[in-house]
Length: 298
Ligand SMILES: Cc1cc2nc3c(=O)[nH]c(=O)nc-3n(C[C@H](O)[C@H](O)[C@H](O)COP(=O)(O)OP(=O)(O)OC[C@H]3O[C@@H](n4cnc5c(N)ncnc54)[C@H](O)[C@@H]3O)c2cc1C
Image (tube, rainbow, N blue to C red; front, side, top):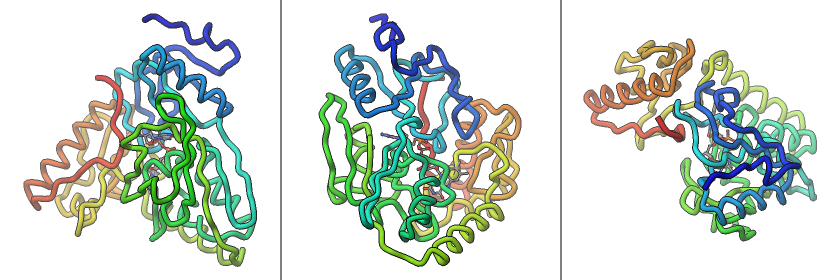
Protein backbone atom coordinates (compact mmCIF):
# COMPACT_ATOMS: atom_id res chain seq x y z
CA UNK A 1 0.00 0.00 0.00
CA UNK A 2 1.33 3.43 -0.94
CA UNK A 3 0.68 5.98 1.80
CA UNK A 4 1.30 9.67 2.06
CA UNK A 5 1.69 10.15 5.79
CA UNK A 6 2.05 13.93 5.55
CA UNK A 7 -1.27 14.14 3.73
CA UNK A 8 -2.84 11.74 6.24
CA UNK A 9 -1.66 13.73 9.31
CA UNK A 10 -1.09 17.32 8.11
CA UNK A 11 -0.67 18.80 11.61
CA UNK A 12 2.03 16.36 12.74
CA UNK A 13 5.81 16.80 12.42
CA UNK A 14 6.67 14.28 9.69
CA UNK A 15 9.65 14.03 7.34
CA UNK A 16 9.86 11.85 4.25
CA UNK A 17 13.02 9.90 3.29
CA UNK A 18 14.92 11.45 6.16
CA UNK A 19 18.51 10.30 6.79
CA UNK A 20 18.80 8.89 10.29
CA UNK A 21 22.56 9.51 10.62
CA UNK A 22 21.63 13.09 11.55
CA UNK A 23 20.05 11.78 14.75
CA UNK A 24 22.03 8.71 15.83
CA UNK A 25 24.90 8.92 18.33
CA UNK A 26 26.99 6.77 15.96
CA UNK A 27 26.30 9.28 13.14
CA UNK A 28 25.43 6.19 11.07
CA UNK A 29 22.14 5.16 9.48
CA UNK A 30 20.30 5.32 6.15
CA UNK A 31 16.90 6.93 5.57
CA UNK A 32 13.55 6.35 7.22
CA UNK A 33 10.68 6.21 4.72
CA UNK A 34 8.67 8.34 7.17
CA UNK A 35 10.11 9.93 10.30
CA UNK A 36 7.48 11.12 12.77
CA UNK A 37 8.13 13.24 15.87
CA UNK A 38 5.05 12.94 18.07
CA UNK A 39 4.47 15.89 20.42
CA UNK A 40 1.68 14.26 22.43
CA UNK A 41 0.48 10.85 23.54
CA UNK A 42 -2.55 11.31 21.27
CA UNK A 43 -0.23 11.68 18.27
CA UNK A 44 1.61 8.48 19.22
CA UNK A 45 -1.74 6.72 19.48
CA UNK A 46 -2.90 7.94 16.04
CA UNK A 47 0.31 6.68 14.39
CA UNK A 48 0.19 3.30 16.16
CA UNK A 49 -3.44 2.84 15.08
CA UNK A 50 -2.67 3.89 11.51
CA UNK A 51 0.30 1.52 11.24
CA UNK A 52 -1.77 -1.32 12.70
CA UNK A 53 -4.79 -0.74 10.45
CA UNK A 54 -2.63 -0.44 7.31
CA UNK A 55 -0.17 -3.19 8.28
CA UNK A 56 2.80 -0.82 8.01
CA UNK A 57 6.14 -1.45 9.69
CA UNK A 58 6.54 0.74 12.78
CA UNK A 59 9.89 1.28 14.50
CA UNK A 60 10.20 3.25 17.75
CA UNK A 61 13.37 5.19 18.57
CA UNK A 62 14.29 7.17 21.64
CA UNK A 63 17.37 9.41 21.59
CA UNK A 64 19.16 6.96 19.24
CA UNK A 65 22.12 6.51 21.61
CA UNK A 66 22.18 2.72 21.57
CA UNK A 67 21.60 2.08 17.88
CA UNK A 68 23.39 0.81 14.85
CA UNK A 69 21.03 1.56 11.96
CA UNK A 70 22.09 -0.08 8.74
CA UNK A 71 22.99 1.93 5.65
CA UNK A 72 19.78 1.02 3.76
CA UNK A 73 17.71 2.69 6.48
CA UNK A 74 14.33 1.71 7.91
CA UNK A 75 11.23 0.97 5.89
CA UNK A 76 7.77 2.13 6.93
CA UNK A 77 7.24 4.55 9.81
CA UNK A 78 9.87 5.53 12.38
CA UNK A 79 8.52 7.17 15.54
CA UNK A 80 11.23 9.28 17.16
CA UNK A 81 10.06 10.03 20.68
CA UNK A 82 12.41 12.91 21.54
CA UNK A 83 9.71 15.60 21.40
CA UNK A 84 7.34 13.82 23.78
CA UNK A 85 8.85 15.42 26.88
CA UNK A 86 7.74 16.43 30.36
CA UNK A 87 8.15 15.56 34.04
CA UNK A 88 5.42 15.53 36.71
CA UNK A 89 6.50 15.53 40.33
CA UNK A 90 4.35 14.28 43.20
CA UNK A 91 6.03 14.04 46.63
CA UNK A 92 8.95 11.62 46.10
CA UNK A 93 7.80 10.20 42.78
CA UNK A 94 8.32 11.38 39.21
CA UNK A 95 6.22 10.58 36.17
CA UNK A 96 8.23 11.20 33.02
CA UNK A 97 7.17 11.21 29.36
CA UNK A 98 9.14 8.74 27.25
CA UNK A 99 11.12 11.19 25.13
CA UNK A 100 12.51 13.15 28.09
CA UNK A 101 16.27 12.75 28.34
CA UNK A 102 17.55 10.57 31.16
CA UNK A 103 20.17 13.26 31.87
CA UNK A 104 17.45 15.92 32.24
CA UNK A 105 15.44 13.63 34.53
CA UNK A 106 18.48 13.00 36.71
CA UNK A 107 19.10 16.77 36.90
CA UNK A 108 15.42 17.41 37.73
CA UNK A 109 15.54 14.86 40.56
CA UNK A 110 18.64 16.62 41.95
CA UNK A 111 16.88 19.98 41.81
CA UNK A 112 13.98 18.55 43.82
CA UNK A 113 16.43 17.10 46.37
CA UNK A 114 15.49 13.54 45.40
CA UNK A 115 18.03 10.73 45.44
CA UNK A 116 18.00 7.54 43.32
CA UNK A 117 18.62 8.90 39.81
CA UNK A 118 22.29 9.90 40.17
CA UNK A 119 23.65 6.89 38.19
CA UNK A 120 21.81 8.18 35.10
CA UNK A 121 23.49 11.61 35.11
CA UNK A 122 25.61 10.85 32.02
CA UNK A 123 23.54 8.31 30.07
CA UNK A 124 22.61 10.05 26.81
CA UNK A 125 19.30 8.27 26.15
CA UNK A 126 15.60 8.94 26.72
CA UNK A 127 13.42 7.59 29.53
CA UNK A 128 11.70 5.22 27.09
CA UNK A 129 15.10 3.88 26.01
CA UNK A 130 16.25 3.59 29.64
CA UNK A 131 13.21 1.49 30.55
CA UNK A 132 13.36 -0.63 27.39
CA UNK A 133 17.09 -1.36 27.90
CA UNK A 134 17.08 -1.25 31.73
CA UNK A 135 19.92 1.23 31.39
CA UNK A 136 22.33 1.36 34.29
CA UNK A 137 25.73 2.48 35.47
CA UNK A 138 27.83 2.72 38.63
CA UNK A 139 25.82 0.12 40.57
CA UNK A 140 22.47 1.71 39.74
CA UNK A 141 19.90 0.76 37.12
CA UNK A 142 16.45 1.76 35.93
CA UNK A 143 14.81 -1.19 37.66
CA UNK A 144 16.00 0.04 41.10
CA UNK A 145 13.68 3.05 41.00
CA UNK A 146 10.98 2.05 38.50
CA UNK A 147 7.39 2.10 39.81
CA UNK A 148 5.37 1.57 36.61
CA UNK A 149 5.45 1.91 32.82
CA UNK A 150 2.67 3.28 30.56
CA UNK A 151 2.55 1.89 27.04
CA UNK A 152 0.44 1.74 23.93
CA UNK A 153 0.26 -1.80 22.62
CA UNK A 154 0.78 -2.48 18.92
CA UNK A 155 -2.99 -2.82 18.49
CA UNK A 156 -3.61 0.57 20.03
CA UNK A 157 -4.57 -0.20 23.66
CA UNK A 158 -3.34 1.83 26.64
CA UNK A 159 -1.79 -0.36 29.30
CA UNK A 160 0.18 0.14 32.53
CA UNK A 161 2.77 -2.38 33.70
CA UNK A 162 3.71 -2.53 37.36
CA UNK A 163 7.43 -2.74 38.09
CA UNK A 164 7.10 -6.54 38.45
CA UNK A 165 5.16 -6.91 35.19
CA UNK A 166 7.71 -4.78 33.31
CA UNK A 167 10.35 -7.46 34.13
CA UNK A 168 13.49 -5.34 33.84
CA UNK A 169 16.60 -7.50 33.87
CA UNK A 170 20.14 -6.94 32.64
CA UNK A 171 19.60 -4.90 29.42
CA UNK A 172 16.16 -6.51 29.07
CA UNK A 173 12.50 -5.69 29.72
CA UNK A 174 9.12 -7.14 28.80
CA UNK A 175 8.72 -4.39 26.18
CA UNK A 176 11.55 -5.97 24.16
CA UNK A 177 9.27 -8.97 23.72
CA UNK A 178 5.82 -7.32 23.43
CA UNK A 179 7.05 -4.43 21.20
CA UNK A 180 4.76 -1.99 23.04
CA UNK A 181 5.44 1.71 22.60
CA UNK A 182 6.52 3.19 25.92
CA UNK A 183 4.86 6.57 26.48
CA UNK A 184 5.78 7.31 30.12
CA UNK A 185 7.31 5.82 33.25
CA UNK A 186 7.00 6.53 36.97
CA UNK A 187 9.89 6.37 39.41
CA UNK A 188 9.96 6.16 43.19
CA UNK A 189 12.80 8.21 44.68
CA UNK A 190 13.72 9.30 48.19
CA UNK A 191 14.51 12.59 49.84
CA UNK A 192 18.26 13.17 49.91
CA UNK A 193 20.95 15.73 50.57
CA UNK A 194 21.38 17.97 47.51
CA UNK A 195 25.09 18.49 48.12
CA UNK A 196 25.73 14.75 48.18
CA UNK A 197 23.50 14.13 45.13
CA UNK A 198 25.38 16.80 43.11
CA UNK A 199 28.79 15.49 44.18
CA UNK A 200 27.81 11.92 43.19
CA UNK A 201 26.54 13.02 39.77
CA UNK A 202 29.67 15.11 39.15
CA UNK A 203 31.90 12.20 40.18
CA UNK A 204 30.11 9.79 37.78
CA UNK A 205 30.39 12.29 34.93
CA UNK A 206 34.08 12.90 35.61
CA UNK A 207 34.72 9.13 35.57
CA UNK A 208 32.97 8.96 32.16
CA UNK A 209 35.05 11.81 30.75
CA UNK A 210 38.24 10.15 32.03
CA UNK A 211 37.51 6.66 30.70
CA UNK A 212 35.09 6.90 27.76
CA UNK A 213 35.69 8.25 24.25
CA UNK A 214 32.93 10.86 24.59
CA UNK A 215 34.56 13.08 21.97
CA UNK A 216 33.77 10.57 19.18
CA UNK A 217 30.43 9.20 17.89
CA UNK A 218 29.55 5.78 19.36
CA UNK A 219 26.63 3.82 20.76
CA UNK A 220 28.22 3.38 24.19
CA UNK A 221 29.27 -0.13 25.21
CA UNK A 222 29.18 -2.26 22.09
CA UNK A 223 28.72 -5.58 23.88
CA UNK A 224 26.78 -6.83 26.89
CA UNK A 225 28.78 -7.88 29.93
CA UNK A 226 29.36 -11.64 29.60
CA UNK A 227 28.79 -13.48 32.89
CA UNK A 228 32.00 -13.47 34.88
CA UNK A 229 33.92 -11.14 32.54
CA UNK A 230 34.14 -7.54 31.35
CA UNK A 231 33.82 -7.19 27.57
CA UNK A 232 36.24 -4.24 27.50
CA UNK A 233 38.97 -6.18 29.32
CA UNK A 234 38.61 -9.24 27.06
CA UNK A 235 38.88 -6.99 23.99
CA UNK A 236 41.84 -5.07 25.40
CA UNK A 237 43.67 -8.28 26.40
CA UNK A 238 43.11 -9.64 22.89
CA UNK A 239 45.07 -6.63 21.58
CA UNK A 240 42.13 -5.33 19.58
CA UNK A 241 42.23 -1.66 20.54
CA UNK A 242 42.75 0.39 17.40
CA UNK A 243 41.43 -2.44 15.16
CA UNK A 244 39.81 -0.60 12.27
CA UNK A 245 37.59 -1.26 9.27
CA UNK A 246 36.88 1.79 7.11
CA UNK A 247 35.86 4.55 9.51
CA UNK A 248 34.95 2.31 12.50
CA UNK A 249 37.52 1.48 15.17
CA UNK A 250 37.77 -0.24 18.54
CA UNK A 251 38.39 2.77 20.77
CA UNK A 252 41.97 3.24 21.91
CA UNK A 253 40.61 4.93 25.05
CA UNK A 254 38.03 2.28 26.09
CA UNK A 255 38.07 -1.12 24.40
CA UNK A 256 34.36 -1.64 25.11
CA UNK A 257 33.43 1.10 22.63
CA UNK A 258 33.47 1.00 18.83
CA UNK A 259 33.84 4.60 17.62
CA UNK A 260 33.14 6.29 14.32
CA UNK A 261 36.43 8.00 13.56
CA UNK A 262 35.87 8.91 9.92
CA UNK A 263 32.50 8.65 8.16
CA UNK A 264 32.02 4.99 9.12
CA UNK A 265 29.25 3.01 7.49
CA UNK A 266 27.10 0.48 9.33
CA UNK A 267 28.91 -2.19 7.35
CA UNK A 268 32.30 -0.98 8.74
CA UNK A 269 30.88 -1.03 12.26
CA UNK A 270 29.40 -4.52 11.82
CA UNK A 271 32.67 -5.89 10.44
CA UNK A 272 34.51 -4.58 13.51
CA UNK A 273 31.90 -6.24 15.76
CA UNK A 274 32.22 -9.58 13.91
CA UNK A 275 36.02 -9.51 14.04
CA UNK A 276 36.07 -8.72 17.77
CA UNK A 277 33.57 -11.51 18.47
CA UNK A 278 35.65 -14.01 16.46
CA UNK A 279 38.99 -13.09 18.04
CA UNK A 280 37.66 -13.08 21.62
CA UNK A 281 35.89 -16.40 21.05
CA UNK A 282 39.01 -17.94 19.56
CA UNK A 283 41.16 -16.72 22.46
CA UNK A 284 38.86 -17.03 25.50
CA UNK A 285 35.87 -19.09 24.28
CA UNK A 286 33.55 -16.25 25.41
CA UNK A 287 30.66 -15.25 23.14
CA UNK A 288 30.24 -11.47 23.05
CA UNK A 289 26.66 -10.44 22.39
CA UNK A 290 25.99 -6.92 21.04
CA UNK A 291 24.36 -4.52 23.46
CA UNK A 292 23.80 -2.01 20.65
CA UNK A 293 20.51 -2.58 18.86
CA UNK A 294 21.14 -3.35 15.21
CA UNK A 295 18.24 -2.44 12.93
CA UNK A 296 17.30 -1.53 9.36
CA UNK A 297 18.22 -2.99 5.98
CA UNK A 298 21.56 -3.30 4.15
C1 LIG B 1 28.56 7.75 25.22
C2 LIG B 1 27.52 6.75 25.64
C3 LIG B 1 27.50 6.26 26.94
C4 LIG B 1 26.55 5.32 27.34
N1 LIG B 1 26.56 4.87 28.62
C5 LIG B 1 25.63 3.97 29.02
C6 LIG B 1 25.62 3.48 30.36
O1 LIG B 1 26.44 3.86 31.20
N2 LIG B 1 24.68 2.57 30.69
C7 LIG B 1 23.74 2.13 29.80
O2 LIG B 1 22.89 1.31 30.18
N3 LIG B 1 23.73 2.57 28.52
C8 LIG B 1 24.63 3.48 28.11
N4 LIG B 1 24.63 3.93 26.82
C9 LIG B 1 23.65 3.38 25.86
C10 LIG B 1 22.32 4.15 25.79
O3 LIG B 1 22.50 5.52 26.15
C11 LIG B 1 21.24 3.53 26.67
O4 LIG B 1 20.97 2.20 26.27
C12 LIG B 1 19.93 4.33 26.60
O5 LIG B 1 19.06 3.88 27.60
C13 LIG B 1 19.22 4.21 25.25
O6 LIG B 1 18.17 5.15 25.23
P1 LIG B 1 17.72 5.84 23.86
O7 LIG B 1 16.55 6.70 24.16
O8 LIG B 1 18.86 6.51 23.20
O9 LIG B 1 17.25 4.57 23.06
P2 LIG B 1 17.52 4.24 21.51
O10 LIG B 1 18.97 4.06 21.29
O11 LIG B 1 16.81 5.23 20.66
O12 LIG B 1 16.79 2.84 21.41
C14 LIG B 1 17.28 1.72 22.11
C15 LIG B 1 16.20 0.64 22.06
O13 LIG B 1 15.08 1.08 22.83
C16 LIG B 1 13.90 1.07 22.04
N5 LIG B 1 13.09 2.24 22.47
C17 LIG B 1 13.56 3.49 22.72
N6 LIG B 1 12.54 4.27 23.15
C18 LIG B 1 11.43 3.50 23.14
C19 LIG B 1 10.05 3.74 23.47
N7 LIG B 1 9.61 4.94 23.88
N8 LIG B 1 9.18 2.71 23.36
C20 LIG B 1 9.60 1.49 22.95
N9 LIG B 1 10.88 1.20 22.63
C21 LIG B 1 11.78 2.20 22.72
C22 LIG B 1 14.37 1.17 20.59
O14 LIG B 1 13.46 0.54 19.70
C23 LIG B 1 15.69 0.40 20.64
O15 LIG B 1 15.48 -0.99 20.46
C24 LIG B 1 25.57 4.88 26.40
C25 LIG B 1 25.58 5.39 25.10
C26 LIG B 1 26.53 6.32 24.71
C27 LIG B 1 26.50 6.85 23.30
